Image (cartoon, rainbow, N blue to C red; front, side, top):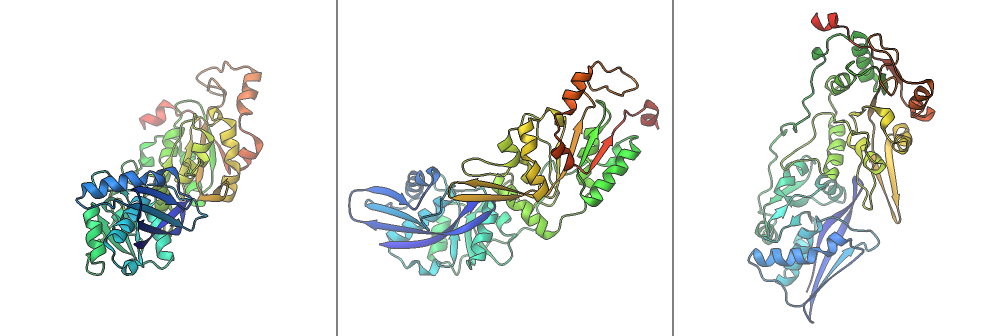
Length: 401
């Protein structure tokens, strides 16, 4: 018996619809997946079998063949589990699958039969919506996130029996009701510039940066307040538009940064990677490309503290993304694109010891050390930074005011 359900595959933040076909035929018990499936998808057979049995259903003792179409698109991710299980159950019960022609399934199955949250649920659902699919079945943890896509009927599933109940009566099954704006995730309530004593000219520069989305390089001795100033910049940026929120949420969903029950990301991102970060972690990469820190900071602030200590290959890799506002990662047979329109805020000491030009302490660096330290930022990188600002040490009298 043949059955067919719909799901989707994700490349970057964009998806493509995938048809999952399951056929149960005579022969010795076996499970085969065809259609350019990745390792995670091939492993799904054991998860699906255990989930079906532990949920109290029968599993076919015959030859099971699963086809993922189109066959020329690589399929990766654990979200195929639910669609594969749904297709096998339909084929085993010999029921008409055409009533589910406008439904898509996304979710990972545990061995106990529960449905676990997955990465990229929102872009997967948006892909299905664009393809004319009106209903999606997703884990309950992803339901609030997916419900932000207008025009979709969302079915929230806790376990495999919920999915089977929906399949037996898709028209009557209750849809998920959006809970409204979710609470902002921890770490997105930004401090205020009222905490910064002194540095009036620096705060004025921050206002200019926020008004025009200008990148900047702050240079000053240790303790002058560079990090304090940078951390407060997202708090004075204008609120994101609905379209910007949707784009940021898609990236955070793919990166696995959304907690269960989260809706749209309401606050502008602020990312401050350590200077030991790799090139792939900064701009994105991997065999199955994932967004880097520059894309996770999309429509927000990317803060590079002690920027001369970053590997030169990392800084040079950021040149094109900063210019174009996107990262394109090409792999054999596919290419992923991640947006990355950020305000870059870089901070640096004036020299290796940190006290060149300081009035309170004497610099101990030689001329050669000064030249070497300052040359770590190439001309093309500096050319992409709009404002270069000197941040002097704050006088004690200014703090006491």
